[in-house]
Image 1 (spheres, rainbow, N blue to C red):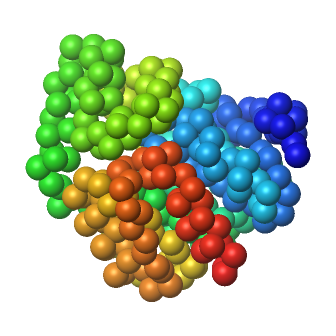
Image 2 (image 1 turned 120 degrees about the horizontal axis):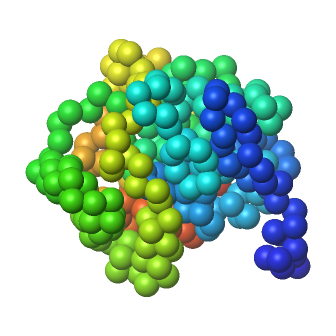
Length: 275
C-alpha cells in the first residue's frame, strides 16, 4: 500500500507561465487527462478527497484559477479569460483534451470551456454549478450578493466573514472536518475579488443561450441541500444539454464533493467508466 507521504513524492507540481499570468498546478496518475476546477475563494485543496482517488484511473490535473490559491492575481482593468487560461495550461502540459470537472464557479468555467473548445472536452461534470447568463436569482442568492457587497466596503476580512457564514456553506459547516478545511482556504484567499472588479471575460452570447451546442457526455450533480439557484440551474442544464444525466446527492449542500466524498466519487467514476 502506498502511503500519503509516498503519493506526495509522485505529484508533479509547478507553475505554468501562460497568457501573461502564472498558474499553479498539480498532476498525479496516468491515463486519460482529467482536470478539476475549484470554486470561488477556494483552491486545489478543495479536491483533496478526489485527487488521489481519481488518479488511480486517470491523469488528474488540479490547478488554481487566476486570482486564487497560489496562482497570480488578475491585473485591474486588463481583460482575460479563465477558459483561455485553462486551455493554455493544458497545452503547456502537453494535453490536447481532457475530462473537465468543475464545482460552482469552476462548473461555469468548465461549461464555457466545453463551449469554446469542444474538441478538447471529452466529458463534462458540472457540480453545484453556476451558469453564465442565469438571472433568475432567488432571495437567498440576492441576500448573499447584497451582504457581500456591503461587507466588502468595510474590509476584505469582513467580506470573508460574511462569505463563510452564508447559506452556501451552511451544510458544509455542520461537518467539523469540512468546516476546518473551508475556513483555512477562505482565510488563505487574498480577497482580491472583494476589493476589485474582475475583468474575466465571459462568453458572448452567454452560456445559458448555447447549452444545446454541448454534445459530449455530461453529468450534472447537485447537493440536495444546495440553495434554490443551483437546483434551478441544474434543471436548465439537464433539460438543454441533450447527452446529459442528473444526480442529486442526498444530504449534501453546495460543497457536495467535500461533504459526501464517497457518494460523490462513486457517482463521477461510474459516469466516466461509461464514457
